[in-house]
Image (cartoon, rainbow, N blue to C red):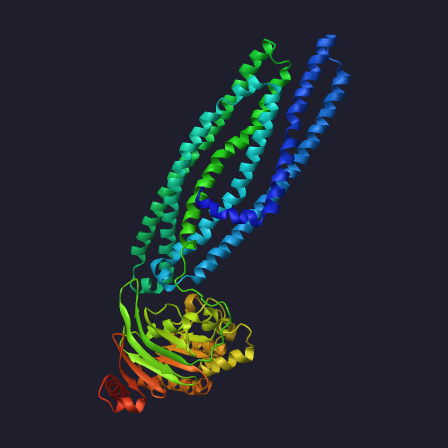
Length: 587
């Protein structure tokens, strides 16, 4: 139960609903106890009438029985209504807790850093926010409700039974210690098997998610059968874990019903013997005790189910807590709003990726004023994209510092920093939504005219209006409906409509032809004149108009200057220019 203590804050949050549910449960149990007592009284009235007159006074007995029947019906209806209200109170509370917990988990996922997502698979993350939270809800709702119901009913019923006959109560409850021991042993095994089942379910979810995301590659390499075999193996393993859990759960039902049956036999035997020797005064007490035992049947039977739910919930909450306890590496040090102007500087920046120990940047320094454009060129793996991720504080530098407007970016408000930046990644990510909404993702309050204008600047407007639904065209997962070039241009439109102070383009024109590239760059000249701009590219044509150009190699700056300056220097830039020029001139 240690892991489930995390949920206590939700019980405090919904304390009034929780307390109301307990009160309703208490009142409902009181009304349920009327039926056994009224039946006992009916038996006793018949016995007393027979002892007094030698025969039954039918009219008097009929009147009393009718009165008791009416009372039984009324109290049963009231108990039923209160039970309904109890479920409405406590089960609805569990849904509210589920809602809050899912939001909490999702919010925590959002603040965790890139390293976390490199180490954890998407399927496992999804499983924890769906399957695991669902298991926890069963604890907060049905498990807690039936536990309260059982505790209150046991308290009232045993008190009533003891008041009628302490000795018969003792005999009736004899099987319960054996039941408690059996539940304890089974619960431990359930917890173990439930954990294994949830882990395997995460593996299956992760594998399925990866297969669906990469279905085009699988089809291209004709690997459908191989992946089918892998899924079948994982599914078989999941089936075995599920069956193992189901088998141990299945012991509860027969065991509990057997215990209840034994309790009934004990009541009949010992109650009958006590009636014969005069220890109890009425045969109705035996009937009353049998009804009490039957009232305890479901609470006792639910103990196994509740125990199973609690064990499964604890296993799931443990998995959830593992992530909730992770502190994000990137912290917002400054909660106060910090305006961003755009002057950017790298001062002897060094950075190493923690998960691979790859040194991405070494002693990188440059300055960029507002309105200036910096182009970064270099071979694959030279550290170009790392510079952009550091500016967005997706990672923090290991050495040196990055400043914006003279302030270390770690001392800026994190949300103001990121809100002031527009990023266009090389691998453009689009959502399964309309093209218009994907562009408006950069500015949800944008008008349709602003959307159209941004698309025109990104030279994608003409493509969009040729679709049947134009801007309302819904894209497939990750924008699969569009070509690579179209996805990049929609991403550029998304950044344009945000109107950021700092614009970062990470090789975002690699999938478009040179003519379209030239159009986009010309359109961006006016747009970028009052912004700080960084373009990562492999093309000289994208870099030639930049105010500054730096060449990276193995994380170090090996050349820097303007287009004309670098052309007059022997080195990588000049070689790249000559190579691309010759390729362009080839027939």
